[in-house]
Image (cartoon, rainbow, N blue to C red):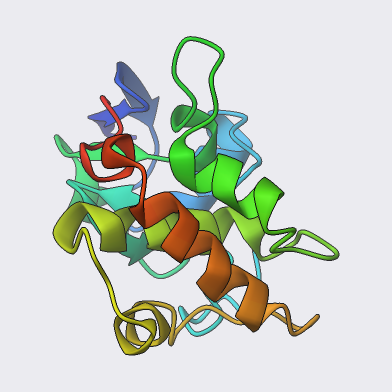
Length: 161
């Protein structure tokens, strides 16, 4: 079995897994990073979203071989020095979740958006989250959370990973 190296949440990780294995399976089953959720398995619901070299990416349909040598950030890697990432804090402030299953993917997608667009319009946010599904329907609060986070200058500076 081949051995690949990834940088996950700022730490190099050597993974012995087939290159065809989904990144989501590697994160959850081999690296015990269970914040990233399995949803549809087809890249359509966004529950499995992670950042790959700063880009929001669905990990269920991304092969391990596609991310070898790249920087991956999961929801577990957002908080720094015990302090929540501004997007995470904004989700709490706006109560932008109900059951919470979609929240990690939504937060990661919002971080990716704010890194590329520091002042998104509601339409920009809706576009960035078009592939993230919330069955509880908290979209208005999610939009509010992104606007709160956008006001924080640290939200757009990156994750440090």
